[in-house]
Image 1 (cartoon, rainbow, N blue to C red):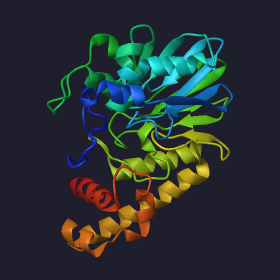
Image 2 (cartoon, rainbow, N blue to C red):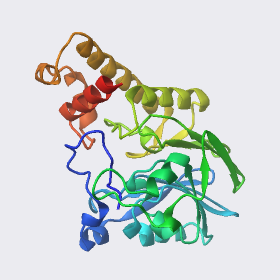
Image 3 (tube, one colour):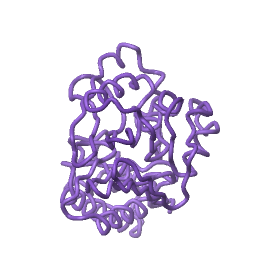
Amino acid sequence: MRTILLTCFSMLVFAVPAAALAAEDWARMQLKIAKVAGTVYMIDMVEGTGGFAGGNIGASVGADGIVLVDDMFAPLAPKIRAALKTVSDKPVRFVINSHVHGDHTGGNVAFGAFATIVAHVNTRQQLSVDGPDADEKAEPAHAWPVITLDDSLTLYQNGEDIRISHFPHAHSDTDVVVYFKQSNVVHMGDTYFAGMFPFIGRGGSIKGLIACIEKVLNDTPADARIIPGHGPLSNTTELRATLAMLKETSAIVENGIKNKQSLKQMTEAKVLAKYDKWAEDSYINTDQFLEQMYKVLTRS
């Protein structure tokens, strides 16, 4: 079982296997579905009903069937199907994995039995082998993507041009962003944590993450709705605010590294204190974000 989040440093206490959660934890979690625009809906957790339910799901619903972007965890598959049933009786035909992490691909085990899984080639490779951590076991073959892309691919479903584009070394080395052209909706996976500090996993980089967000903003109409990997439904104004925060914080940390400051010195100096508000709804605090940024920048 893949961990909830494969982070670039091991101190994040929530990077635990989904299998470690008790049955009552899964039973307590409740999901909600809401219309975004056009054919697209978003599924996320009802606030206060449980723990970490996984990444936000996008769903294109129409005459051709349902196209999902991400599928949370396998134990939540019945609740995902129940949410979808409230808006359509059509089957799930495709599941697009935004990246490899288990809180976005864990449901492949359930949905891969009858739907076609699409992802970047690196996602298939990583799901099909044991990972470097003890709990990262290869997923069963039916949970692997059967259609992969290197750079981009387009699905034509429900009257949508669903364009899937790879962004190398952003949140990870497996990221894709999904554009629903006719509905004017973008699902960014974990290349965007709305209103909070992001994580950068193995294979990711801060420069790649910034480049990804810049490219999405350049290619996306100003009035588009944006589904983040985590956090509430968003828009381009809020995405620009995240981009500005990432540029500013990375410049501060890079300057400290250039001036031979250690991580301890920067932490004690509270060099990112101005950005504490980004920790309020995040899964990490400002010091942990600084540590992540420092480690990513010193290895690049």
